[in-house]
Length: 239
Image 1 (cartoon, rainbow, N blue to C red):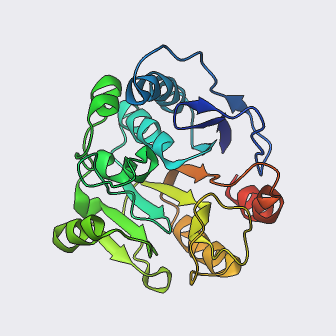
Image 2 (image 1 turned 90 degrees about the horizontal axis):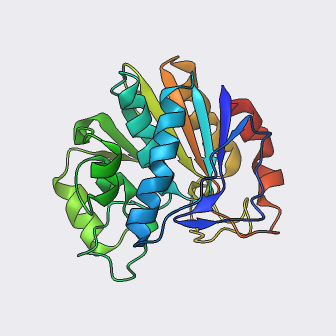
């Protein structure tokens, strides 16, 4: 795979981004003035353009919203992917349901056609059908997310009951899916989750199907915590 670094958390550049794997390309444009969504739209236009021209990209970034650019880039290349989304959180909030207003809690909802459409419209992201999405081990859900998932076609599953999609697949891994005991320094740690070897085994099962066309690795940790060293083995395996 070609490893693409996007050293941003939302619309903020991370000057000390600690990648767990050597990278081949870096997407690091100057962002325009504007709202955070407008700035991210400019960033993810660059991500989409890079992904569309790159065979089997692995995109390493500081949060999950980068996935919008990855999926849009695959669509530009003529690929309509299913999604396997490893995350301790649901990422299916909207501006109306989120009490914190944290934009990083909304990307999966945007990918399936909901929430704020600023980025999606700017980069030409077409909604992925809910039935083509598998949400793995999202265990820290706010009530609006529980309500949404209860009526959505998104398959919300524990890590030990992971269905493998047929056809081209975008594999997205937010590292906070790993239990905080195995990965210190996470921005939003969640207890009672799968241990790192269990996550690695589940990821391998997706890769073994031979359908993964792109990978997103959201490195949602604090600088200096050393988490990149602990995840380096899995990251190297992915790359």
